[in-house]
Amino acid sequence: MQQNILISGTGGQGIVAAGEFLSDALFRKGYEVMFGRSYGAEARGGSCRSEIMVSDVEINDLQFERSDVLLALSLPAFKKFMGVAKPGSLILVDNDVYERAGKVRDDVEIIRVPSREISLKLGNPIVANMVLLGALAKRSEMVNLELLKDAVRANMRPSMQEINLKALDLGHASI
Image 1: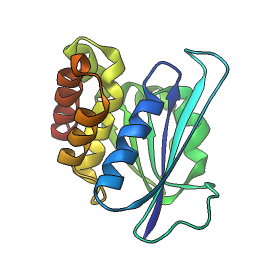
Image 2: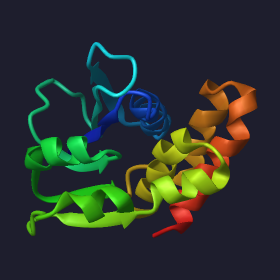
Image 3: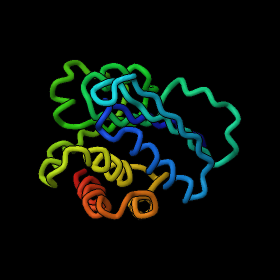
Image 4: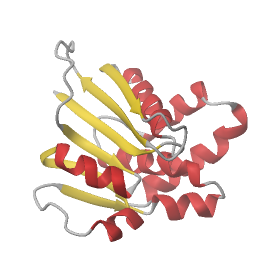
């Protein structure tokens, strides 16, 4: 089994951090993991993505061309990377983004997640990334909520752990 996971959005939405936490959780489960990131020259507002290759055997081919799983937090990222998703892919997208997207493919499974809404209720829009990861943990057999929480506890500064753990829980419960 090998899967390519693409997390996309704009700079400042925690896209790279989400990729790091997901990669750590997958590694903790015993998978082989390759993690890459790409972002524009702008610190905030530019295009940003995290690419995670996960496998139960050694990863020899590092070409990330198509995604099996796509997480999208911004409309430009959703439109840009929708075409990268393989037919049959799982796509988790913020509700607001989906509502503004227009025509969407019908050969993929789309799960709408109220990530922005939940993050605003928590008082910090940047935790929308963790809401999406929590939803992914509920929907995916590869990673579970506790492994994501372990990754947060191990890699996030203590002052931000509580809100991110809540965001994971609420994302998990949202679908």
